[in-house]
Image (cartoon, helix red, strand yellow):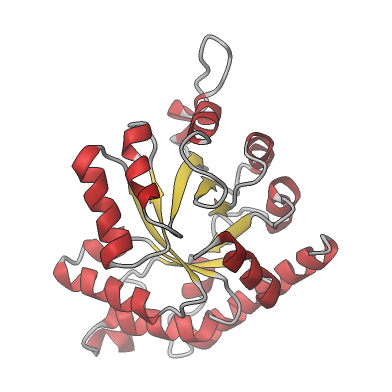
Length: 272
């Protein structure tokens, strides 16, 4: 999917919502567990209920591959079911070099046909560039995360007082463009989003942490906005687990619609 197509969807749906499909068998409604493929049946219902309110879906790969071949089958069926005009993110956080990186790219782009994949940049350029060989596919690079352990490395400064996450941002701009490179920037570090935006003014951000993790949508828009919106704000648990009863899909739709309506207000305020 191209940048222009993503922007067109944001304008059409008045939304920059990404729904995270972190589908946990321990949390989905009990009545689905008797079906042949509970994960896919849950995802299918969530997609049907929320597709009018979001512009992206983000399956977290760990929730699928932990089930072995059956989990990969559920993932493939889920990605195939998502409408073509909705951006798909394989949240895999891969990061290796050489042929390994190339095969990861084949896995997510050639076989699963996802539009994008999240990448950990710790091993540097040759762990990222194989993913750029696929046209109209995206790398979403981990830049600034919200977890407690982010303080262990991301804010370490070098002799020039440049913090590591800023070095990652600056260096990665040599590898891709705003047509194929996005960044993961955590919502619970709102002012940090502004720091990232200063360094990469044109790129889209995938922003987790709004909703159950306590991030503020208004703060994300304030600090992360650019002329093309530049934001895909993810919400997982708040939407997909809005209910664990037979009304789970309707509850998910209501939660997604609520976020979409808040986003529509922001888009109007920004004259977008």
